[in-house]
Amino acid sequence: MSSLNFSTVNAFKHISDAGSVVLNNEELLQLQKTLNAILEDIVSVCDEHNLTYTLGGGSALGAVRHHGFIPWDDDIDINMPRKDYDKFIPLFRAKFKNKYWIHTPKDTKGFNLLLSRIRLKGTSVVTREDFANKEAGAFVDLFVIENTFNNAFLRAIHGIGCNGLGFLVSCRKFYRDRKQMMSIAQNAGNKHLTKIFKLKIIIGFMISWLPMDRWVKIGDSWNRICKNNKSRYVTVPTGRKYFFGEMYRREDICKTRNVRYDGKLYKVPRNIKLYLRNLYGDYMKLPDPDSIEKHVFFEPFYLEKGDNK
Image (cartoon, rainbow, N blue to C red; front, top):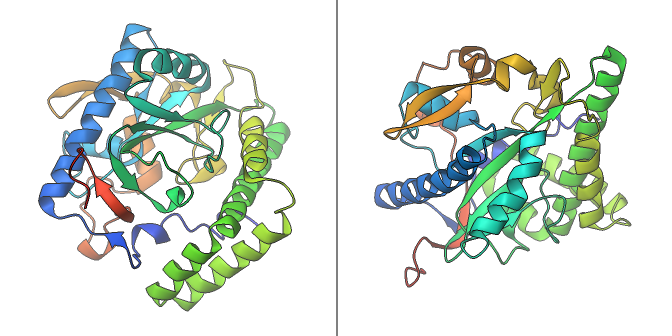
C-alpha cells in the first residue's frame, strides 16, 4: 500500500471547504511579501554560517521562470542537506526565537509533519495541517535532503520505509482530524476522494494506539537513518514525489548556483534543469488555469496585528 497511491497532497491544492479563505490579489501579494522577508532571514543564517540551502519546488521554478514568485503561488520551499539542516535549526532558533516559531518533527510537540516549518509570530495562515495547532503563523517549508545508501538493496529498504512511514503519519493525522477531513472531502463533491479519506481515517484508527508525536518521531528517525554525508545519492522523502521520485546524485542537487529571485541572488541546485524537469516536466510552459495549484487556507487569516478577520 504505497503512499503514492493514496496521496492527497495535490488534492488539497484544488479543493476548499466552509471556513476556507480565498485570497484576493492584494492579500496574495502581501503574503508573498511576508514570505520573502522570512526567506531573507533564513538565508541570512545560512550565509553567515556557510550552510548549504537551495530554493526548492515551486520556489525554484519561480526563480528560473519568473525570477521571483510564481504570480499565483502562495508558499516558499527550501531544501537543505541533512548535515546543514542539523546545524541550521539551533542557529536559527538562537537568533530568531522571539520572531519565529520553529516547528520540526524531532522536537515540536503536536507537530504532524515530517518536514519543518519556520512560522512568523503575530500572523495567522492556517492550513489543513493546523487544526490542532495554535502557532499557525505565515510559514516557509524546509525540506531535508537526506543521505541514502550506495548499496541498491539498502537504498530500496530505506525508500520503502520512508514512503510507508510517511503514509502512516498521514493516516494517523487524518484520524485525529477526521471531522474536518470528511467535511472537506464531502463539500468537494468528489466520491473517489471521499473514499480515500475514509480509508486513511480507518488506517489511522487502526494505528491510533501509538500517539501522533511518536509516529512522527519514528518517521523522522527512519528518514535520517543513513549517516553517510558523502553518499553518491540523496533524496527528499518529504518532497512532492517522495523518496524514489526525488532521488538525485549528490552533486546535482547539493552543489548550488545563484539565480536572481525578487531582485536578490539565491541558491538553486547546480543541475537546476534536471531538478525542474523531474518535478514539472516542461517547466517553462505555463499551466492551464484549471490546473494551477494553490494552498487552501482557513480562518483566521491575517498578516499583521489588528488585521484579524
